[in-house]
Image (tube, rainbow, N blue to C red; front, side, top):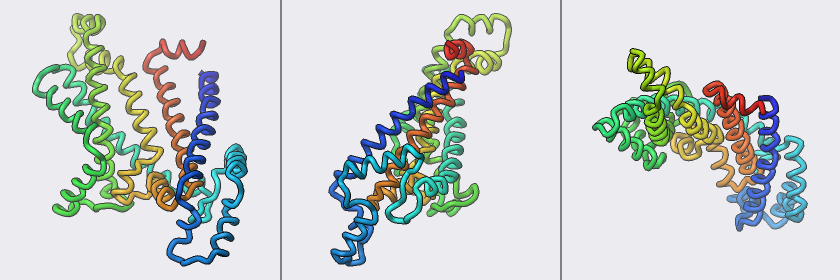
Length: 310
């Protein structure tokens, strides 16, 4: 297992370097000038523009800027924000706890919705509940987060006045964004739960468990669900990893101070170090979560653990 983890960490290095290079050159050859974005509204003189460009190191050739940035990246330096003058890594870590909280509760909402509906839909295949569950899953996948978030704000904040429309704080500030993000995730997770359960409940060992006189609840939970978890965990893990990288739309709608909003602000201000830093951290978060999911596989299926040891 340790050798497998070491190999996965090594594989992360070229992914980070490649993603950094792609984003760097895309932003470098854009028509937007970060200096003019930074000095917007100040009516700067030509001398001020050139001085700011020199301070940011943007007056050097692109290839020199690239190798300078990559050299800092190898040392663990994500650069300094153009707009705030603070280190990107510190900015990211200040925002990360808010994103972690939102991602965790969105995952909780997704599991709370998808697992029960997926299990019952598989058991009662082609019933009215199955049709309802699959319709819900389709709507969850097809409904844009920004639309769902706005509808929830109109209903629960504007019309009923039960919950705040945005901001960061206790549980009441978390409910609407968690439901918005978690409901979208639940659509795909519900379909995966149903299909995985349908495959498992038709196996011979499930019929054997029923023939032994075990209750249907024990057969479904202990035998069927346990063996159907691997594809479900895969989907939930990928969704959680992307949420940790920043749920940009949801965080923007609800004014949630997470890394998603940090990236949006960086894009709007053409703050290249912030955007690249957020992309790098997204790669790291997704890779770490995927690695954790792979390790979890070994506990769900001992055969996979034997494969890791080879």
